[in-house]
Each structure stands twice: as structure tokens, then as C-alpha cells.
Image (cartoon, rainbow over all chains, first blue to last red; front, side, top):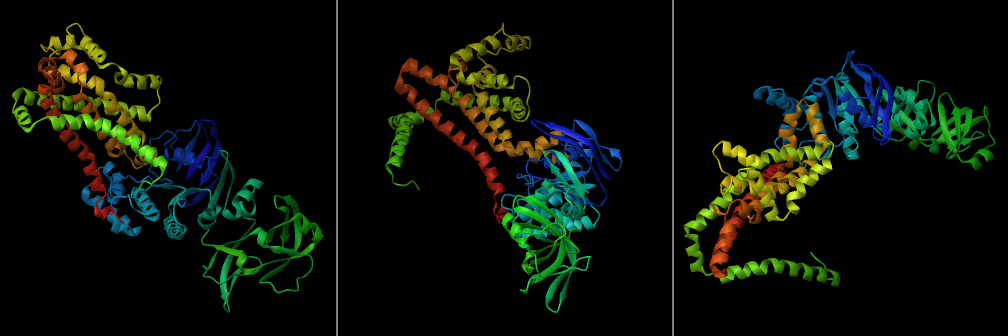
Length: 352
Length: 268
């Protein structure tokens, strides 16, 4: 649906090079990258705010590389919302309709409808000076969505929002995605990708280094950068269930994790941080919430000492110090037990 | 609240000396002007005509030049082009020129032999000793204030707002009139007021292109040189009062707009 073919753009000393991405209709594509990796530049190229030096941008197989911004019908929500301070919330949302010379009656109806959907009807007549981050984000979304864009581009949409409000905004994004809107969301936070994306791309120094489903990208990073950057070693798609008051997260394999008491969705994604998993070379006698027998499938030095991969039906990536590794006296194919507390499992809602 | 420290006291004393330097001569002039003299000056037709001429010509010059200055300011704030720094230097040139030299430059331009003078002459208009010539002299020395203030205003408009407007379907001119211009408006108005005030108080450049009709600064100088300080002082006081009133009124325009934006229903 949205296809970038070998896009290159030189921007001072930085350059985007050979960017090729194919995003399907209805996809929620999260582009992950650090600050200065070229994420925002790429969005601006798709929106038409910048022209590429080479390459093509196609939407539904139509080449829009040189099409006017106004004719692309691609919505862009900026990182800090870019709300017009000289207009009321209503004026902001209605801006595109005034550009299109829509009748005042229709403008009012459409603004009211979108404001109701995004729960901002009560602030329509206010100026934007004192709105909260969450309200500004909703106004920015409403202002863009009212144009019925084919593709919604979100530039770090959760970066300036209080963590308490992030879930509300994520919920809106999920609803939009469920309705079939194709979304391209750029962020530096892998947790946003895990909880929202149906596909993920990782950009580094102006180049796309991996594209795939969240599971593919985070469990099988193509290189050390993606693995380190994502901060995730052990990543599982699970179904949550409450068995006699104990929350469990079952994987497709036979493994089932004991989770801390909390409210969980019926299914989702969970991670276990590498540093919370312990390795034992004999069967532990103490009681652990989670204890699994496995085989060491890989061992290699890491910045923490050694990274040990244990195959216990699912792959667990465990960081241990070099000293501990020596004491454990384990090698590839050694039989080991891994343990971790119920609190180590972190559920990430959604995740496509 | 300023803390009671020796450093702060030194800063306060030095600041007070400068303020006193500005206020003392003005206060002295006001105190030495009697009510009867002032009333007589208020009723003086020459003084009335002179102040009115000064006000409307300065306003007209500012208004007309704003039409070209605002786009120039936007170009300087938003676009990079060859010799941009040279253009910026040219804009600042009238500020550093001696005003009599500026007047001579304008005179050369609007005299019968000058480019503009010839053009005006062909339409039967003489710019020298004419309000149009006065307006040009005022504008020459004061237009940098408007351009620079408006340029700073446009530069302070976040570019992402303009980009957002473009993605929402606005064309470039709509973005300019609905986003850039309104947000830079306060700076433009500040520049407008500064240009108007500077033009209104101009003497050196104006006296060279038009001794008559007399604008207020020329009239004050003429009375001082012909009749002395006591005769010139009431006209000065009256002009200062009128100028201050106009200045305050113009300053209130952007202020009122701000208040509208921050009306109670805009508060959380």
C-alpha cells in the first residue's frame, strides 16, 4: 500500500540511504530508531515536506514522489503536536476543512463528530495555551483524522505525554488501527513497538537495518544493535489465564509462566528481562515461581559478561557475569535450570 | 523580589542613574512649562497643524512601507538566498547613517533630477516640501525597525506549524496568512509602533527634504532657533504628550489581542 523504493536524501552531514519499506494496507508499522537516526526525516519525505534525492514513494502503486503535499492525503501528527496557538481547538480541527471550502454547517458537524470520538468536545472553544499533553495530542489527531487520510504518520506521538495518559492514547491508536487505518509510527521506545505494531522497522544512521513482525525483530534481531537497542532478550506471545487465583501466561509451547498478581488481557506479549533470569547447573532445591529445565544452546561474551541462551522449549537470553559463568562450569549443550520471580514477567498489552 | 545584597544594590544604583538621566530633563521641561503657556500652545493653529501632519504622515509612511516590509521580513526569516547577509546589512544601513546624510540621500532620490522625483514630476507632483517627501524621509530612517522586528517574529514561528498547515491541505499563501502572519503579529505590531515612533520623531532627514510644511520636530527647532528655549518648550511638551498617548494606544493593540487569547475560558 505504501512502498518506499530505495529512497535517499542528503541532509547536511547526515543522509538517509537506500530506504526500502513495503507497508501493507491496514498495517501498524512502527519505525524504531534513536534520536538523529532519520525517523522524522523519513516521515517528512512520505508526507511531501521534503523531496528525496533519489528513489520513489508509492501509495496504492501510484508514484507520489513528486506529488504536491496538499494532494497526497497523508496525515502527519508532529512530535510536539504543532497545534496552531492562534486558533481555538475548533479552529485547529476545522483548519483543513476551511482550506477545502467545506460549508460551515458540514464543518461543524464533522468537528463535533470527531471531537466526540476523541473525547474533546468540552474543549472545542478553548485556546490551546493551557491544554495538557494528552489533550493536545487528541486535538492534533482530530485535526489530522478529519481529513480522512489514507495513511496516518505519527512522529514520536507518546514522547511528550505523561506516562499515566499514554495508555489512553495507545488505546486510540489501536482503535484507529482496528478500523483499518494504515499507521506509520516512529519512536525510540521499543515498548511502543511491542504494544502497538503489527510490523516493525529499525532505522539506524539513516538506514533500515531490520523489518519484520515485532516477534521476529525482537526475538531474532538481525544484529547486536537491534538486540541491544530493543532492550529485550526474552520475548513471548502468551495467553493469560487465572488458575485458582494465580495468573499464568502460557506460550504456544508447553511452557507456562507464573505472573505477579495484576490485571491481564486474554492474550498479549510479555518480556522477561535478561538480568532477572538466574541459571543453575543443578536442579534448584529452593522454591521458585518459575523454574524450567533447558539446554544451553549458545554462549557468547556480552557487555555484562556472558550472554547465555537457554532452550527450554522457548528461548531465554540470560546475562551473567564472567565469574558466575566460570563457577557454573557450563558450556553449549549443558543441562541447566533457569529460574525467575513472578515479577520478572512484564506483560505488554496488544502487540497485534 | 530583589535580594538585599551589595551586588544588587550596585546594580540598582547604576540603573537608577540611567533612568534619572532620561527622566530628569523631561521632568524639568514639564515642570518649567506653565499651564497658561501650554493652553496657549494647544490653541496655536500652527502647532495643531504641525502635530497632526507629523502623526498622519508618520502613520501613512509606516502603513505603506509595511506592505513591502512584512514580506521582506518573512523572506529573511525563512529563506536562504545568495547575498542574504548583504541584504541584511543594507536594511540596517539607515540606522547607522547620520540622519542629515540620510536626508541628503533621500533628497537626491526625490529631487527633480532624481529617479523618483522625475517620475513624480511627470505626474505633476513635487516631492520636496511635500508630505510625500516627508513620508519618504521618515520611512528611510525608520523602516529597519519594522523589518527587523517582523523578521524576528517570523523566525520565532516554529516551522513545524507551517509544515502542519501544508499537510492539512493549505497552500503556501494560506499558510502565510493563517499561521505565520497571525503568530508573528505581535512582533510585527511592535515593529510597526517602533517605526511609527521613530518616523514621527525624525528631524535631521526630514528638515533637508521639507522645511515646510513643518512637522512638529522642525517647528520646535524653528521656534527654538528664532525665539529661544521658553517659546519652544510648550510646543515640545505638547508634542511629547500627544506622542506618548498615541504610542500607548498603539502598544495596546497587540496587548488586547493577547488578552482575548487568554480569556477565562481559555484557562484550564
